[in-house]
Amino acid sequence: MPIYKCRKCGNEITLSIKPGQCPSCQSRQFSIIRRGNSKSLNSDLGKNSPSSSKTQFLSSSLHSSAEKLPKTNLSTGKKSSPSLESSLIVPPVIKHQKTTSQPSLPLYSSPSNSYSPYQKSSPKSRSSQKKKFNLLINPIIPIILGISGVFGYWLWMQQFNTSDFKKVVLQESFKSSKNWSLTDGSIVRKGSLFQRQPIPYHFGASIWTKKNFTDVDFATDVTQIKGGDNNAYGITARVNGKSSENFYYLLIDGKENFVLGKHTKDGWFPKVGWQKDGAIKAGNHKNNLRIVCKNNLIFGVINGKRVGSFRDQSFKSGKVAVFSMRGKEEAATVYFDNALAKEK
Image (cartoon, rainbow, N blue to C red; front, side, top):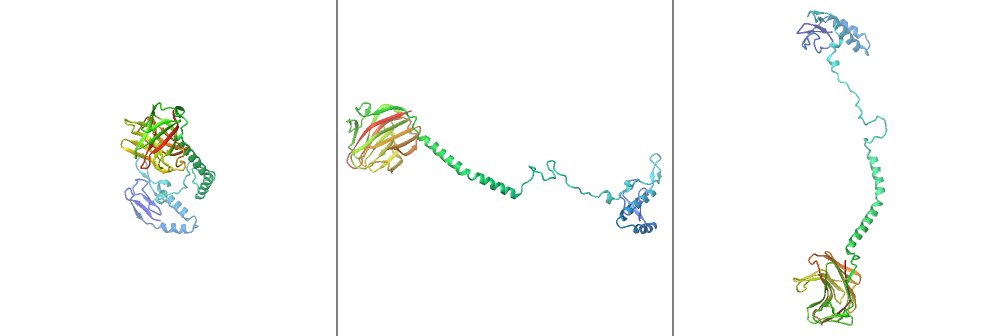
């Protein structure tokens, strides 16, 4: 076995491998000195069994080295040769050997198979959970959509609710022309207001002058008893202006057509129509027309059917009137009856 000599203090160490440092001066520089007893030591080691050869070899080396290395007396500073502690001459291979250990489990984990909320579910379990969720939610979706649709329709219909128009302001059977500003060619007789428009492409309106309405529900029966089917006639609301040129209107003709819109000094602005509607009775039949002004919502009703609506903020208030217009055909003669105006 080789003998290592410290180059700094001269201590000799017998080991099978180079020592890490000198136990006396902690130097790491050594030179090798070979002696004859290494052969006998190797032959003795060869007699041992393979399983214990390494252990006996290290034990013999440590024992022989401990006997030969000198010790330093701390009081006198002189070196002596008692045996060294085996821990000081542990080979670096053993001293710095890395050890492997089992990884520790997290504090919340358990080596058992018990359920933990931190354990990840397998793709298969997630898929089964998704299927169960779909089976549960799919039948509910149509119900939710149906309820939402019904509620949305109900909410939309509430804007046309006129149940709060309860105060009757005008209920006219036309026994006289009191409170009416009649247009040229108009006359009240036999419980009706007859209105004749003799000039082609001209219109006239007879206005109830007693009250200005903000929100109003105004209706009357109208019948054309003479004239062509292209003549227009109907009712107006929120009539205002110096010449009563501003108003909202609902008009029909003798061909089952209607129009809903507004008129200003700049002209006609139809919002809905002209267009055909089966609710209108053609020719010389009686039709009930109704126009409602509710905030900025304007809508028309013919014979109980709502035919159109629009929103406009041009006119905030005004009077109500009955209206007739002549086209290029013969003079239109229309009579109005059962006028009714209500407000909130």
